[in-house]
Image: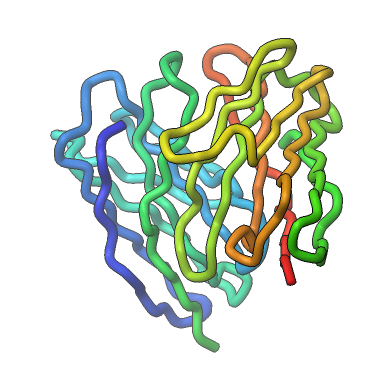
Length: 111
Length: 117
């Protein structure tokens, strides 16, 4: 799977939007962008995924640039419970089902 | 989303003993499950892919004789850490692959904290 790069950490104020960037400049045409998060001492939780169109669900929005080399996960109204490590992963759907986790980014939501 | 459970949630054992960790898909059948290991302040590292009815596929550097995986049913995979040592202390996480159209999805268990004394 293509590698992704994310900032090491980010802080956000409670109630504000949190914009989490991810670079995936070597992404292939058949690779999707997936976002997971891991709250301390828990298993990862799926957030959202997309191929090239922007996506939105009840948890977040995913904005993918037109060239697909980067994306942004948006938590519209961050809460203290959103404090977690966020992982941006690219994978081929229908290919190897392995998920390769990078270092992720620690988001801290402050009161 | 689908639910995956792990048992136990934590375990403490003496060095040299074996420990079994169970991973269950509660509301779907999973031909494929994955086992990960996570050391403190590090990311998840894939250890092996567990395939129902066949041998597991181990990632490079993972000792298959030390980390025994059995996937005897479509809802249960077990990881046995044999002759555990303190360096095996870690957070072990499983995931189960739900096969669906248009794409398969992985659902993760809550993890098992292993401490080897």
